[in-house]
Length: 602
Image (cartoon, rainbow, N blue to C red):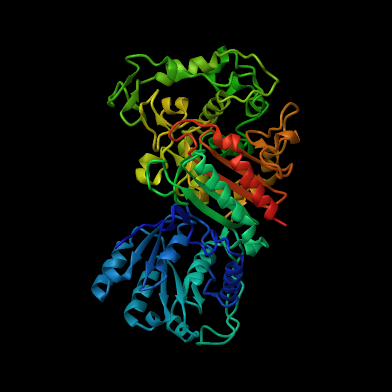
């Protein structure tokens, strides 16, 4: 009845997104594909959209189902749907008569929006038309009709909800229509001829592009052959054991034009990396969870960057942190020491291999820390740590422990819940979040380090950072997991200066303030890392513009936004598997791939 929502193409250890051409690298083939995409776009028409149901804007509290009425491109169609929202798939092969169609309608009772895909050969079947009409009485139904010369449109004269008609029935049209439904591409066309009293010549609605689209590099003027060097760099990294596998994604001008996975989950397995895999983001958490939360609270007037820590954190009022302004914390200029290795202080009795009321906090498989360990030991140690370098730039994880606590005081909500409700769910980010083992099968999460010192287990879905692990996996400096596509979404929103999917998440001036240089003693913005003006460092890459902002992660990750080039670059790997290695850094793998992308942009 249902099947996987995240289908992907795989081959030779490399997995590519099903989106047309987003992983292809052959210029001539992609030129032909682009021509076909343009041909489909010029003939696909959106009808019956008076209520502006398309594009689908609201994703929160909007459960979406995709119902295939014997549509032969449903795998591609549903894969693209799932790049925008969690969509559950239903196949009419399981419901072949009126009785079982009633069962299908009953199975859809918990969904608010239903997308029905079918071809012209089914459109004249009264049984299925009755099913669609019945469903439309209680649901928002969007019909996607593929094939025919238009005569089948007359069968839907009684339909009031949106109808998208594409004369083509192939993989390219199956990729394009979901993008139109969610606003990845705009509807622009009108019927060139009349087909019924309702669907007359000139009928049709226009929409705007409001989300990412998925296309080929040639769509933004990039020759695919110029990106082949990315394959070579990835192969070099794997051969030199800089990382067992990786995912690379690039967005140019709002279009995902490159998305490939390389290698395997670990060196001793044949489980190929996939573009849908979930990685431990490490310090990318700082700018993907904590910093956006701070931005939101600043906009709401709940947080003043120039107010002292002690106003927001009661326990800090008797600590050395009390009089330090929040702005200095966000700039890593508060004078905090870089980190405290709390895991080295654990002694017998502090942890248990089984959970209980006395040991409730799960650190990893078969490892639980005692109740109050953070509140009674870790937090006092941080609050009372010496302030030695105030006014100077010293990168410190303690900064984001502090900011997490401030966010939670002001939001009156745990950081993981706050980010999920305010950003990830409404943006359509399905994998991003803390504690992924609570939400996803272990196999979808790429293993990080084989920890032989502290937790003595392979870390798969539990945060690599020891301090974040000891607080239960939700911290301000680490603990976030995500797939590449989800990161592309939130960073495209930032590149758009706060707007995505028809919703404004931040004011443009807020994004500008946090992402632009804000320090007299470092390259940093507020929370965000930035391009280094010391050109000898080539950071984050040789060709990155001075506007570039983002962050790297210890596990071998990075996200960089280059507004001057309209580029979002995502790199995910597990370079700490099976144990920590600096080869990824020393070989400059992340920066070299970024330079390939920048060089290809004209």
